[in-house]
Image 1 (cartoon, each protein chain N blue to C red):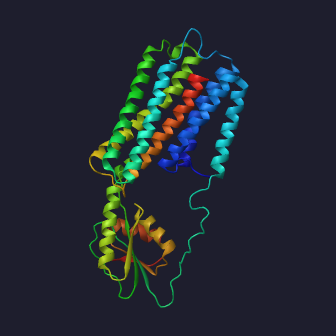
Image 2: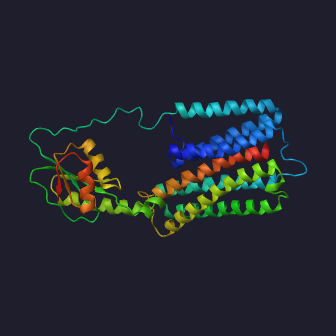
Image 3: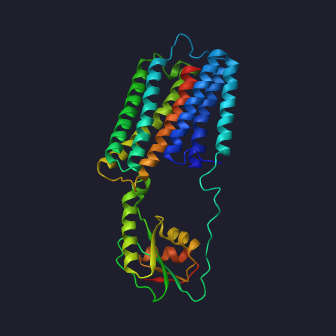
Length: 183
Length: 171
């Protein structure tokens, strides 16, 4: 089933569909009350059918290939670094993925003012990617443990390095079934 | 999001159930004589809300294209039109000639339109935050999550008004 409020554009489209449906019901009701009732039933049924049959974006695409296993001879390291981290020491020759959680305060999360925090995380990720040879970096969820879990679904790491404070370290250590150490 | 939609359907659904029960099962005339509903003002308000959705959409499309001033103008216009809607609805409440204690019809009328009005008030609060942030340069073509979410809520409020306006004022 497609969520009609999935995006602003889709919500706007839903509004016009509802306006059109309401106009049909009003016209039918002015002609005859029972015709209006029939129009309402048909309009609601059509809306339900449309929501059920409208393709969900991405649903028809094949699922992404998840490479959770570590290829022989490689050592994979997942680094979780908060925004502002300048550099991280990683083992030589390791394949490194750096995840920078877009940390936001409770007020920022509630008001949706997370764009600046995400911008900070993107800047840190770009800087770390440039400083750590052979690494790639990306922005993760605002919860560091969730960001690590998300990354591990597509990047089978042998160990996790945490460059954050004690709270972040403990949160990740409790949620991740891999060796977790401080960067 | 599904939980939000479900909770809103249940909330509005309870009031619409009362509306249909009073009007169809009990057969209470709508509006009960000698009262009249301010259909013309509500119609104008409907046009204002529909236009505000268009300006909201304009704001979102603008910021996606990097047009910051288009977004600011769109958000400001949306806020002003939403405020006009709320003020004129409150003004109509004082002029309508009946109140909550005058029977089932006024009770349902005030509950349904008031419930929607409270949603408009919440939407205006969100819009005020969004507009302030827009003028402080918080949004860009790459980062406009706040505008997107606020836009979804505003369109939802307008969808609910179309349903309320059709059932309460027109049918």
